[in-house]
Length: 329
Image (cartoon, rainbow, N blue to C red):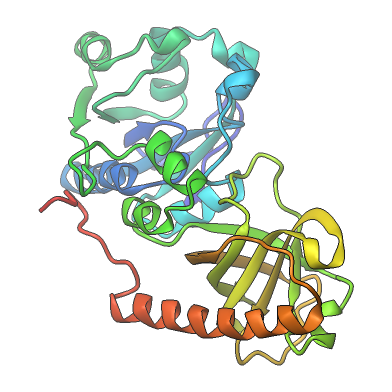
């Protein structure tokens, strides 16, 4: 995927790109509904001999339109970029969402951004799409604009979860916030994850026989699951490792600060300052205070067994694979 972001005033598309099939949206989480839209974009581009493209925004539009209502993010901008890079879409434009862009009508956005900058010949949108000021640009308005300006509009229907409800970023946020990571993973098509950097800790875990990595550098806007102990898989420069992680305070030692501290199984490399991705596999228990270090160590040994069991179950289940179209089928 190539980055075609260059503000609003110019297109970074090569002059050889005669036109694009594009989609527009925030795409927080890039869940299975989003992926279905991206698959439609790629398929239509191949069929028409055009380039495929995603136009998205940073920050989340609500951080500008109504900051108090802005949701915590399922994916930060770098996380979205990593996921999008693994799709078949060829070009990506990340537009800075500003107060100026907020005032664009749907028609103005279509004319100045989609047509003039990104040469859109066909626009693919979700069933509940809203483009432009006040989300006025629904499917009906965009089709009317397309008829007058010479581009086609394709509307993609919802992908449903196991209960028959449309998958949405809001729905995924609700499950993550409730600690229902299995449902979240089914809707995302992958485990929910968080990216950060390994920082130095107090080395207390090493003294207890459970050396840990401490993960910092998280975006303040990133949504975290509830506090507790989790089975995790951690992607590191040295490879992927299963493990267990405490998310939250460490009350046994009087530490009330929220932290992410993970013990990785069968890992003997130093990861200080390394970028890592923590994939949440299962919630094992709530955070609790123990009478002392010995009681904590006994619980950690049980946690390790539970985490290994959870990781094995996920591997046997095919690493959380889901149907690409309808999870009820």
